[in-house]
Length: 516
Image (tube, rainbow, N blue to C red; front, top):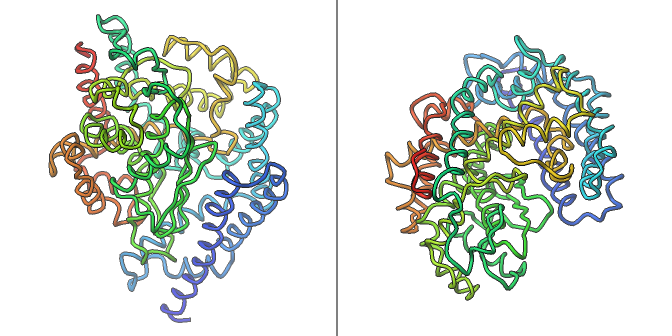
């Protein structure tokens, strides 16, 4: 076969794999978390296991591997083809190492464990989920051996999600950041403005999740109208996407032309839905900005969760919690919710930037959020090392919350059962939230050098300028480069924690009138 025919055969196989991937990961999973009736889970689990197995089978075919081996480092390769082959090699390295039967069993385990976790969480019954959690961690200990590592078994899990990321690197970034977060929280607690609350009517209504709207309750229809206005303004294209209601906020991309946002709402908390939709909307803009020409190459996607999550954090927190954002959207929200006019933009700004320890990760403020992540990372690593018993995990979880945040869960629903990640098989995933927040702050610094302050851009409605800069420096490349390469190219330096610490220091020193 010629070079050209081998390349075309390979791309034909890739298209088949992408068809399966997008159908399962987006349409079938999207339906599962939005509209599927509860009794559909058993058969749906089998369908998902079959489609995942088909993807692995296509990747493992002798002919597919032969084409990759022949084409790899070929002198005729374009830059795009080289990137495609590099991504295939990386994916194959992980998928090809796991025995087919064991991988199918893992997919079935995860499909069932999500439902068991949800029931256990609702019933506050950790023991019901314990057998599944033990099997999941046992599985990932084996996966770490299959994938290989140099220093630490947890490195194999980190590397699966983020190329070149290691325990050593994470711990190095945490060296200064962890004590900074704990000490800053303590400084705020002991400051004169520790009980900072905007003046009534909203002050008595705020809860840790960021609720700031006075009664009456806000129904789903009005909240969704606000979400759609915000999404349209920041650049999410509804002709290439949609938004639906589900229990757990997420984003699912079939292609750059079909991006699904799933959001949840709280009738007493307008803020929760807004910040979730900003987070998913930022990710959606990223997905929609990837060139469609990259479909059929494994490159029409984000390079990793880390960078996509970093963009989500940029929109949710750095843009969405800025004074300029609320100045710009204030009248637009009042037009839908006249009662919103009882609050001033200053009150709203203070509310969405209050720092206070909480039990729930997804309700945490920017200052304390990474302490929630650090707790999960440390426990997860200890389990993989065999130093932490899963049966005793709830107690270990509660102790760390007491030590780092000064709060203690009253039950397992508030504590160890609050996240779906382990039930969904995302072991080794939590540190990526940590890296993503650092990346968001570093991207902010680089963007502001070229375009001016994000606060000013938001207040004047220049969201298109933000989107254009991100597209030029990050989005347009899809997965042709690694996250590390893209970040260093966009911001001009390796990842570090100083930008994030400076961002937090400046914001909370202003809000609390104290030096952090």
